[in-house]
Length: 401
Image (cartoon, rainbow, N blue to C red; front, side, top):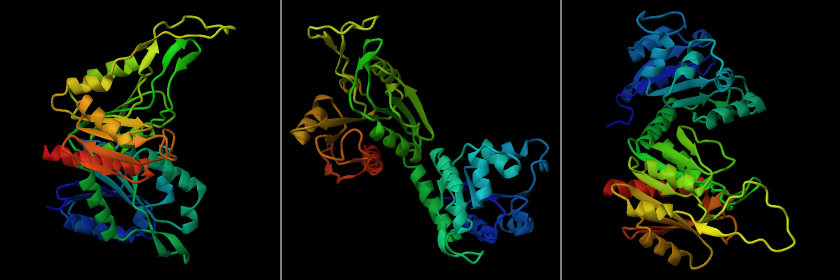
């Protein structure tokens, strides 16, 4: 079965010479089984006609915010609610800037602000426009919000320049959407609970105990899981990271808060990935006032915090449970002990004593061991790539369970 078969797609066409390719794109999408409704901006109508799209799509073509084709509904809201995917091709610098800055002054830009489905932009413009800092910044903003970009090709442009900025070919765009559609369905219907970052255990109003965890690995896992179609809850300790698009983030500070938050959401989770570095100990007494400097040594009386991962393992019913083991010696052996002792389905082990794979690094190298006997060592790569590999293995194991 074709991946796009039955998908409801709103195609926004803006005012660039590449608008002629959108006619072919409409044809290709329709041939793939998609239902395509087209919005033409006023600029696009200077290059292509509504009749061309209507004849190919056999659907109404939408031109103006105030031209309500159905008086029973508000046009831009109805289109946004109807769409499984929204595609803008060609996406000019103008529409990219408007969407990035929340400007809604025509039907397409208004519909985009109402859309909750995945949005894809296929830029097309002069090479210097494409490389302008304002355009780059606007695209970065949209990427952070979850917009996917279909990269333009390099070649001869209508303005006479040669460079990057030519709209991707319709066949290429359809392949991109098919791959994205397949990818977005891999974890569809699954609820993931991911923990990330450190915890902080308060000593007094100005001091606390913590660790070096940056949260980067957990945030990459949450990002990729959301892209794969999962409903993701990210329980995060204090970190300096942006919330991944489409992820429900719950902020905590202490180990006790982490425990309460995770346990309250455990029953409804299908997959739980615990990357957070939770404090093993907390001060027995939290001082209400700042401790003053003294000549003699200071001793803190510490008590154990609750073992969240062990508790999850003991109370596991249907969940697929993943733990992380950050070690400095006997790395794999200690990781395998954790797999058994905590009753995990998978443990991800990394040697934090090695360069470029510690807490604050953007790269990691891990060994993955599963309850089913799989053992796989991944080379040093970005934490994003590690997250993709981890979730690929989890998806395969969950599907085979």
